[in-house]
Image (cartoon, rainbow, N blue to C red; front, side, top):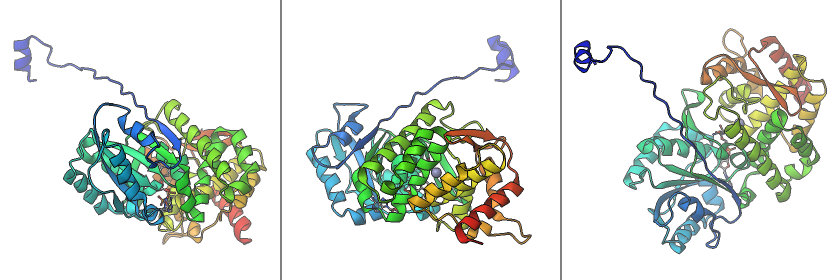
Length: 401
Ligand SMILES: NC(=O)c1ccc[n+]([C@@H]2O[C@H](COP(=O)([O-])OP(=O)(O)OC[C@H]3O[C@@H](n4cnc5c(N)ncnc54)[C@H](O)[C@@H]3O)[C@@H](O)[C@H]2O)c1
Ligand SMILES: [Zn+2]
């Protein structure tokens, strides 16, 4: 408003109008089995939970490796929609999309899927249903959140990691410019449907890698859970369903609790409390050109930061041995040659992960370290010399050198 107009309206020329509102989010995380059996009400409940009494349009996308392992799945989804035609409308046959971490490196796939949602006339009251691993869900969540500024997204996670961590949270995104999760958004899902049955066809490597997030969250939040993981390590390594189910539930619960009650669900402060061991893990994923799975990199990062916590005098010595021993029993390999990659000046590239971690959130560097098993504590600086020492400790443990 120019001052002439202000005079006419008899208002002061300068003013601040304080805008303020709160949005409440809620979404169910179901634990079920045989989610697309016609008699299983969970999927229908998820679609109908906001508005009952109407036909809900949805498009479904399936992780290529899930589709290969479960060849009848697309048909089952279509048959489920048919059997519940009074409440839902599958707008096109379920589509199989590439999966694995490389889909997060492919911006053209995001554009292609956004275009596809346009072709299918998916609007803000329709649903995008994604069935797959954490990488596919992160990418499709981003597609859904950016189409029409946000269409509803139902996640059906099919890996241990996606069921116990990534799939139950609020973050979506892809990698770009050599940086993990560089493009993305906070957009809570409409519902999450965890079906344990899918885990049966996972590659053993992927079954195990997701357990790293359970070890991580137990270390920062729940000592009893850590003890339980130790006591059940063999059953978890062998993917005994009862133990796996219990681990997934507790891990998902702890992640959900942090998001809902940690005071900063969209991470607008400087802290990333759930990302213990992740400053190096994210960097390692990039340094290994994603040869390491996220969970495998997290296991290395968590072990390093536990040793660092001991060296820094925060954590009682011996705890790092327990963590190392637990990961070994679970079947993790905790060393990768890329950890020692250096730039032309001989600097360890992994150390760049510290600044990249800070930059991802902005503000002051805030990294979680351990004060005890089950007790994370934020610190605002890292001693690079001590990190190098912790790495030497881990290398000796893993390679004998
Ligand atoms: N959004 C978040 O909050 C968050 C949190 C943690 C991790 N993540 C992200 O999650 C991703 C890792 O997820 P992931 O560990 O699930 O890996 P992934 O999605 O790459 O899946 C691993 C492999 O298993 C295949 N697969 C998935 N389900 C299968 C099944 N049931 N049977 C057979 N094969 C199957 C996939 O196609 C893939 O090849 C990373 O990109 C990581 O950054 C996100
Ligand atoms: Zn993680």
